[in-house]
Image (cartoon, rainbow over all chains, first blue to last red; front, side, top):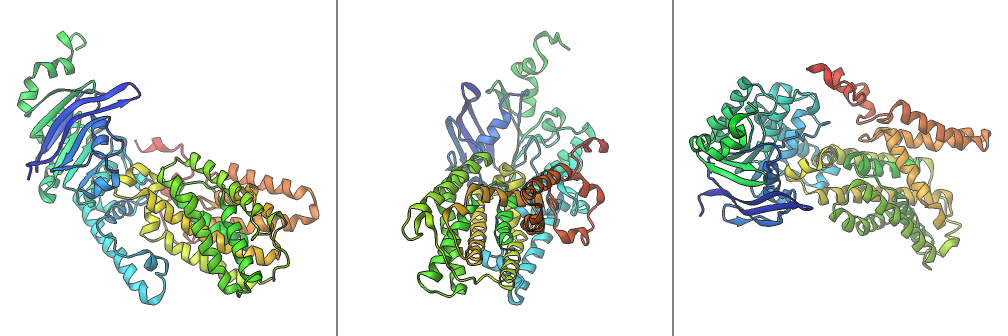
Length: 265
Length: 286
């Protein structure tokens, strides 16, 4: 019944004495785009990893809707409707662009079982498996089309330029049909023009697929343009949260980003 | 030929799941003993002994697979675990009465003829091919490529890995059944870690992520020592030399990440095909 797609409560992570995150509390409202910003090493990606079960938190809880998912494994959390992209792109490099998306479709469309798979060349089953594979490919193509890389479907994933690999990761994440989409620096390495294109794509995706988006980003123009709500981190802790306007005027944020007295200008 | 049956199974496991096993001789041993006991002690026909050997090997694979894969052991730790497991199975065979201890089982009937082995190999390769090119194979490859991303794509690492381990053990069991009825005599020290290492060597030399490569490598490696029989003690040196040469000249194996028919059929962009081999061409697209 909650209005929140997700919330974290007093989340903490301690890596052998190093506090990567401490007392992190925020809510992601349904169907909004929320941003997490902060200097490098502030613990932003750690939050994503805790939310997706890559490692368990040392303190606190993660909720999806009203459900506590703190201790669940990543593949279980994915089934509950969370998918993500990675800061250091993690594609299935030696598979084709299309196969990367098809792999993700398997979660919601397991179209045949292992017996059918093993004996799939026998005449009476061949049809079914072949048709299933074709359906999956068609479906995957529509996701590639959404992010605008359908023409590259047959290429090996790691042959794509960096920016397109990020888009492919997004297509793969969308193919999991998430309710909550986590994007970890989707615009990294892009120039201002490209990153604004990406911003429009994220908006479109949010609307077309009716998802909630939580993103980590360093491009301030993109964040300020896209996000309804921003969470700022520094040294593993909350620095501030609020609307883009509030964040832009927050003295603590300005200090963290620009340094005191702007001496390093 | 018989070796190739077992190698096919291992090719599916190591090549597509990315985990290295040094204990596969144990599955061959289990298959060999199961089949031998079936035909010799219980007088079952060979054709019935093969599936029993396969199932037995598969069940034994669950014994090692469930605890190690559930713990998500990283590849090298998993390899060490299989190494210990292989030894444990051998010692067990040496001390059980049903296996006749270290003396082994002798005077088995020679059921393994060339045509039979060829048919079995064909069936195993056919099944392996279907496995690899299905959604199960795709999930296994996804795990090999990036297990974190695979998990975040909703893939259950444990299920997929266990399934391919089971599959490879079944193949090894069939291989073992044929082996026992070819040599007509089995004893525990035929199934040492050296044997496992040779299997893994075939897979790596043939090409990780390929099915035909390892099969061809297995056939090659089985025949090289025979062809060089005239060279007496030097043949194993040559054998080692061939392995070293393959690794130096083609680190990705004879057919790394590709099947033999791709060489003729699939026209992938040339750049992509080469990218797998040379790691030093990352900078030329910027």
